[in-house]
Image 1 (tube, rainbow, N blue to C red):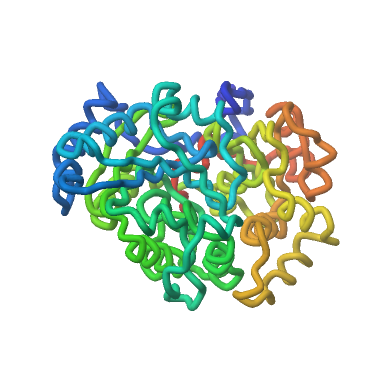
Image 2 (image 1 turned 90 degrees about the vertical axis):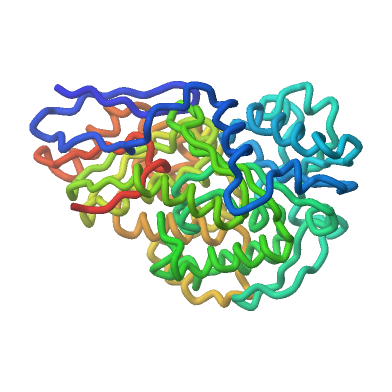
Length: 424
């Protein structure tokens, strides 16, 4: 009987699946981690794509801002950030540097989370600002997005002489891929701008899906925002399930990012036979901290699960629902289908916080039963959001077989955010 393992929090969950039900376990074909992650980042910085080296860009500059991701992203900043700081100061030892934490629409990153992410030396010795998308004193208008929405960004990013960003590239459930331009929008954008970019119309667009950049309206707005902010240089990495660096890409905000996306596309596309039950996860901590983030992993199951099937989602959700509006709207809905229909009629300029997340979750819940597997989150909370619950994968499988029948076929996608799934 095959035993499967799914990342969960800082650990794993396991389950045995009857041989006659098991279709297979589907993962990306990422190569092994680089022998030395720091050396791989150094190589990328030494060989910038379509750009002068970072140290040359910094020459003669009085100040610089480095956008870094927040606590919800497993970017190995302890490896990347020291090298960016060293390069900036190599030919500009007196350059004034601020690290800007790109919280986007998330809560503020705590000091403890900053230390865990960047290391105590950097937190104690560097200037750090945490972006707040609702604090108007931090923000400044920067034009109009291609979609027509207002572009308002953090003033630190707009007013610096040199804007740099670090991040990581993974498949993204509506932006196509993370990384690159996402450091600016939504990373350091105002709530007004994020809401316009994440509108119902764009979320519904057929090109706003995992692994798609071409004709993706959300990606188009993000590229424009990065251009207007004059994002001069990026350092992005691809990481494996152990959060180890596999490959690094540095240089031009668009060309370096595209090369990273193409590399990832070449190794993470997987064809999965249609399944009655799909078991998946969010890659463990930090991406499975809440229900909000866990929707990403569910979309991997959505692509390959048969209509009226079951998606089993293993996610700690120790941080709860992850968004007040997200939770409130789901809990207050008569049904996921009713809320989905309501959201479809919301004009772009009336997008509300978290609308995109519950729109996608409702799209999934309208077609499938979703069973959340967690021992770290209140099951009553999850059930109020139209989710089913279980405390183990075995319990979830029992419930799933009761819905789909004992002959149901089961596919396993251990890390739903690391793959681009397609049905065979």
